[in-house]
Image 1 (cartoon, helix red, strand yellow):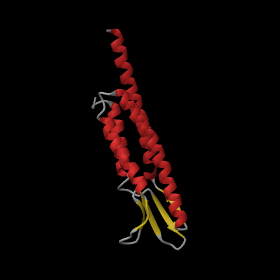
Image 2: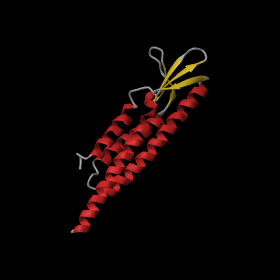
Image 3: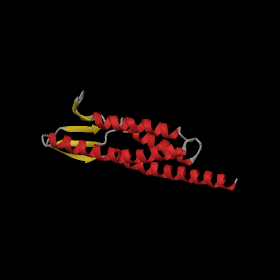
Length: 153
Protein backbone atom coordinates (compact mmCIF):
# COMPACT_ATOMS: atom_id res chain seq x y z
CA UNK A 1 0.00 0.00 0.00
CA UNK A 2 1.10 3.54 -0.58
CA UNK A 3 0.89 4.55 3.08
CA UNK A 4 3.40 1.94 4.31
CA UNK A 5 6.79 2.94 5.74
CA UNK A 6 8.67 1.29 2.88
CA UNK A 7 7.01 3.72 0.50
CA UNK A 8 8.44 6.60 2.53
CA UNK A 9 11.91 5.06 2.33
CA UNK A 10 11.63 4.51 -1.42
CA UNK A 11 10.26 8.02 -1.96
CA UNK A 12 13.10 9.67 -0.02
CA UNK A 13 15.54 7.53 -1.98
CA UNK A 14 14.00 8.74 -5.24
CA UNK A 15 14.26 12.36 -4.08
CA UNK A 16 17.95 11.88 -3.29
CA UNK A 17 18.63 10.45 -6.76
CA UNK A 18 16.68 13.23 -8.53
CA UNK A 19 18.46 15.88 -6.46
CA UNK A 20 21.77 14.77 -7.99
CA UNK A 21 20.76 16.64 -11.14
CA UNK A 22 20.67 19.97 -9.34
CA UNK A 23 23.70 19.91 -7.05
CA UNK A 24 27.42 19.53 -7.57
CA UNK A 25 29.03 16.37 -6.24
CA UNK A 26 32.65 17.45 -6.44
CA UNK A 27 34.92 20.44 -6.97
CA UNK A 28 37.93 19.97 -9.21
CA UNK A 29 40.89 22.32 -8.82
CA UNK A 30 43.40 22.41 -11.67
CA UNK A 31 47.07 23.19 -11.14
CA UNK A 32 46.60 26.40 -13.12
CA UNK A 33 44.08 27.63 -10.56
CA UNK A 34 40.87 26.99 -12.49
CA UNK A 35 37.84 25.57 -10.71
CA UNK A 36 35.61 22.94 -12.28
CA UNK A 37 32.35 21.62 -10.90
CA UNK A 38 31.08 18.05 -11.31
CA UNK A 39 27.44 17.03 -11.29
CA UNK A 40 25.83 13.99 -12.91
CA UNK A 41 25.59 15.79 -16.24
CA UNK A 42 29.36 16.25 -16.46
CA UNK A 43 32.23 18.49 -15.50
CA UNK A 44 31.66 22.19 -16.03
CA UNK A 45 33.99 25.14 -15.81
CA UNK A 46 33.12 27.31 -12.81
CA UNK A 47 33.77 30.60 -14.57
CA UNK A 48 30.81 32.66 -15.65
CA UNK A 49 29.08 31.03 -18.63
CA UNK A 50 31.35 28.04 -18.12
CA UNK A 51 30.74 25.29 -20.61
CA UNK A 52 30.83 21.55 -20.46
CA UNK A 53 34.40 20.28 -20.21
CA UNK A 54 33.84 16.54 -19.78
CA UNK A 55 30.40 15.04 -20.54
CA UNK A 56 28.84 12.71 -18.03
CA UNK A 57 25.81 11.46 -19.95
CA UNK A 58 26.24 7.80 -18.84
CA UNK A 59 25.98 8.90 -15.21
CA UNK A 60 22.99 11.12 -15.98
CA UNK A 61 21.31 8.29 -17.87
CA UNK A 62 21.88 5.91 -14.98
CA UNK A 63 20.52 8.43 -12.45
CA UNK A 64 17.44 9.05 -14.60
CA UNK A 65 16.84 5.30 -14.92
CA UNK A 66 17.14 4.95 -11.14
CA UNK A 67 14.63 7.73 -10.55
CA UNK A 68 12.19 6.08 -12.95
CA UNK A 69 12.80 2.69 -11.32
CA UNK A 70 11.90 4.15 -7.92
CA UNK A 71 8.60 5.45 -9.24
CA UNK A 72 7.82 2.04 -10.72
CA UNK A 73 8.74 0.26 -7.48
CA UNK A 74 6.54 2.57 -5.40
CA UNK A 75 3.50 1.84 -7.55
CA UNK A 76 4.04 -1.94 -7.62
CA UNK A 77 2.70 -2.28 -4.09
CA UNK A 78 0.22 -5.00 -5.13
CA UNK A 79 2.99 -7.15 -6.63
CA UNK A 80 5.35 -7.56 -3.71
CA UNK A 81 7.61 -10.16 -5.33
CA UNK A 82 8.32 -7.86 -8.27
CA UNK A 83 8.71 -4.95 -5.87
CA UNK A 84 11.32 -6.85 -3.87
CA UNK A 85 13.30 -7.83 -6.97
CA UNK A 86 13.27 -4.31 -8.40
CA UNK A 87 14.31 -2.88 -5.04
CA UNK A 88 17.35 -5.19 -5.01
CA UNK A 89 18.10 -4.08 -8.59
CA UNK A 90 17.82 -0.49 -7.42
CA UNK A 91 20.30 -1.10 -4.59
CA UNK A 92 22.78 -2.62 -7.03
CA UNK A 93 22.33 0.24 -9.49
CA UNK A 94 22.83 2.86 -6.77
CA UNK A 95 26.04 1.20 -5.70
CA UNK A 96 27.12 1.17 -9.33
CA UNK A 97 26.12 4.82 -9.70
CA UNK A 98 28.41 5.81 -6.83
CA UNK A 99 31.27 3.86 -8.43
CA UNK A 100 30.67 5.34 -11.87
CA UNK A 101 30.44 8.85 -10.40
CA UNK A 102 33.80 8.35 -8.68
CA UNK A 103 35.29 7.02 -11.92
CA UNK A 104 34.09 10.04 -13.89
CA UNK A 105 35.38 12.45 -11.27
CA UNK A 106 38.80 10.80 -11.09
CA UNK A 107 39.07 10.39 -14.88
CA UNK A 108 38.00 13.98 -15.49
CA UNK A 109 40.41 15.36 -12.92
CA UNK A 110 43.23 13.31 -14.45
CA UNK A 111 42.43 14.71 -17.90
CA UNK A 112 42.41 18.24 -16.47
CA UNK A 113 45.59 17.60 -14.47
CA UNK A 114 43.74 18.54 -11.30
CA UNK A 115 42.81 17.45 -7.79
CA UNK A 116 39.24 16.94 -6.61
CA UNK A 117 37.28 17.32 -3.40
CA UNK A 118 34.11 15.30 -2.98
CA UNK A 119 31.07 17.05 -1.55
CA UNK A 120 28.14 15.74 0.48
CA UNK A 121 25.85 14.97 -2.52
CA UNK A 122 28.40 12.39 -3.64
CA UNK A 123 27.11 10.03 -0.93
CA UNK A 124 23.45 10.43 -1.94
CA UNK A 125 23.45 7.15 -3.93
CA UNK A 126 24.87 5.30 -0.91
CA UNK A 127 22.23 6.83 1.39
CA UNK A 128 19.58 5.95 -1.20
CA UNK A 129 20.84 2.34 -1.24
CA UNK A 130 20.53 2.17 2.55
CA UNK A 131 17.00 3.58 2.37
CA UNK A 132 16.14 1.07 -0.35
CA UNK A 133 17.38 -1.73 1.89
CA UNK A 134 15.11 -0.49 4.67
CA UNK A 135 12.25 -0.38 2.18
CA UNK A 136 13.07 -3.90 1.04
CA UNK A 137 12.93 -5.11 4.64
CA UNK A 138 9.47 -3.54 4.99
CA UNK A 139 8.28 -5.26 1.80
CA UNK A 140 9.59 -8.61 3.09
CA UNK A 141 7.76 -8.09 6.40
CA UNK A 142 4.52 -7.39 4.51
CA UNK A 143 5.02 -10.49 2.38
CA UNK A 144 5.59 -12.74 5.39
CA UNK A 145 2.55 -11.24 7.12
CA UNK A 146 0.36 -11.93 4.10
CA UNK A 147 1.68 -15.50 3.83
CA UNK A 148 1.04 -16.16 7.52
CA UNK A 149 -2.52 -14.85 7.21
CA UNK A 150 -3.13 -17.06 4.16
CA UNK A 151 -1.84 -20.07 6.08
CA UNK A 152 -4.30 -19.45 8.95
CA UNK A 153 -7.37 -19.50 6.65
